[in-house]
Length: 88
Image (cartoon, rainbow, N blue to C red; front, side, top):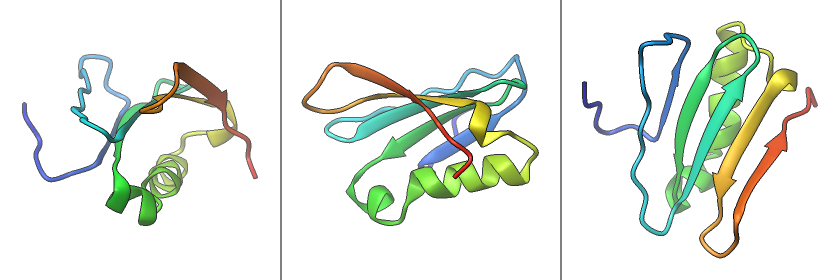
């Protein structure tokens, strides 16, 4: 199923595959220990609107543990990177 007009998706359904397309924006994938996964399109406007912070807030509101969440991203001018979030 194609979902248009959104910059972030979260699911805990193991049968759902999340895909995002980017050009010069930063794609961010997340994986949380209880099974949540997410895909975020962090473009200029989304970054200014704190799309990552807002997505993590929704994840936490849905019962996810952001202290047990890994983020995977690829900057437009660096190699693949990943970080583990903290509860702060």
